[in-house]
Structures are given as structure tokens and as C-alpha cells.
Length: 237
Image (cartoon, rainbow, N blue to C red; front, side, top):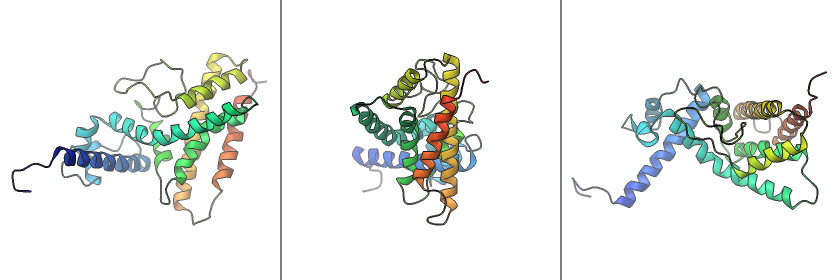
């Protein structure tokens, strides 16, 4: 291409997509390692090898926009897997149990760790998102009912069908819990899931091959813990 000419539109679009993907991958790692607040958009651009230090600002508008893009990028596979699990429960002759319902939350997230043979960062990223003052109520798992709104600067949280099904069926199985108590336990189960899986992801990254508990054991332990939380008597004795 001679000097002064520009690349065809298709090539420019592909290059922009590649840049976005690189920025998302780098930001996920940095946010997982250092937390949300300390990492700047400029740092993300530099770490991603962009000559323009404002590349992340250009592509995502703000840190909250970048967080949204990371979650949207990962949520596609998670939501699809959760939809498959919901379909299996609906085809069953028996109604879903508490354990099967909390597994809709836990298993698709755990499986993101096994999607790569190398190190992963997504669960640690999600755990750190919970601590961010703007992003904390927002994520791939909504603890509050639809329509509650999101903080300024963020779009409304996603509300995928698999999680709506989980909430509806959990409410059916826990009719005696007051609404406020139900919401608290839903919020806590999300927090526990993110923290436990982030801890597992962190230890898996530094463990020798074959070290630590098997993923199936982690899922089983976590599901049992969440079921116990949901079944806890109210009010407490």
C-alpha cells in the first residue's frame, strides 16, 4: 500500500476488533491481579501494546464500559451453558431441587476455568468487580429483581433467562422466606460463589499439575454450602 493510502474498510474493522479483543484480555488480567480501582485505562492500553495510550478510552468510553465489555464477552458461553442445564431440568419428570438450582449458578462459572489449558483470570476479575463502588451491583449474576436499575455510568444489568429461571424456582421452593431475607440470601450466594471460585482459580494458577482439589469436588462443596445457606432457619433460633 502506497504512502497516503488507507486500508480497506474490512481490514480496518478487523483490526479494530482485534484491538478490542486484546484490550479486553489484558484488562481482565490486570483487574484480576490488581483490583478495579488501581488500574487505569491508560495502563490497559500500554500493557496491550497500543501506541495510542487512549485506545481503551476510544474503544470503551470509560472503565465501566470496559468492565461491561469483559463481562459481555465471557457471559455468552456461560449463559449458553446455563441454558443447556435449564433445558435438562425442564425435560426432567421431577421438579428441580435446591442443589440442582444453585448448580445453575456454580457450574457454568467453574467451567470457565477449564476452558483454557493455561492460566485464567475471569473469576478473580468478577470477585474484584464486587468491590468496585460503581460496578458492585452489576455483573453476570443479578441478585436484585429486574428493574431495580443500575448506578450512574453503567447500563442495566443483564438478566439472562437461565438466572431468571433459577430465581423463580428458588422462590417457589422457599415460600416462607420474607422477600428481604430471600434477596439477602440470593446476594450472599453470588458473593460466596465468586469468592470461592476466585480462590480456586488463584490456587490452580500456582499449583503443580494435579495439585489441589478436583473441579468436581469444588463444585460439590460449594453447592452444599449454598444449599445450607438457603435452608438456614428464619428467624434464627
